[in-house]
Length: 223
Image (cartoon, rainbow, N blue to C red; front, side, top):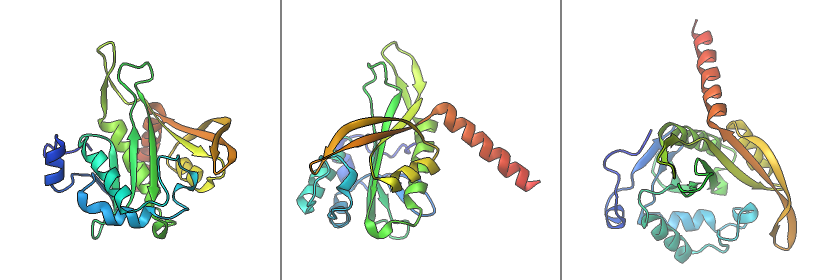
């Protein structure tokens, strides 16, 4: 499912409109950011366990000013790929996720990264698994990339980078169909500790095969 025609196309429109909903799922809503998300984002992200396995671009402490800076940065590109994970009942932000694009002129233009975080009080409820599965489907179904040679292609691969020790995130990726592709040994340093980086990925072929298998399974059960 792609954003509707009402999706804002300028930063000013993004600030004036209600945030466009990307996906409505049973356990969460995936939508674009709104200026009013600042307090909820600051509340959920200002926890040392959130950036424990993340890059240093995600600050801690993460105060209200940090949240406002991030939201405004996202609103500058209202057609970008940074999204809020929101409570399906009241719409309040409880986390975030996004796609890391690759310039269309590059030879790896059809391979994008994916990342996510969720407020601690919402852990263990299956929210990230649902949100990640939904965003993967959305990306493979709808994103079209015009490459340097003028060709138009659907996304061919999504990958996620996970620091050593983040076993919970690795388990989520496995449930969502991503496979361990390799380990970048001793490639990251966090709080003075050098660790490995695990790279997980899912290709369009993997995704299509999984969809076919699920459809077949559902058909068998219905018979």
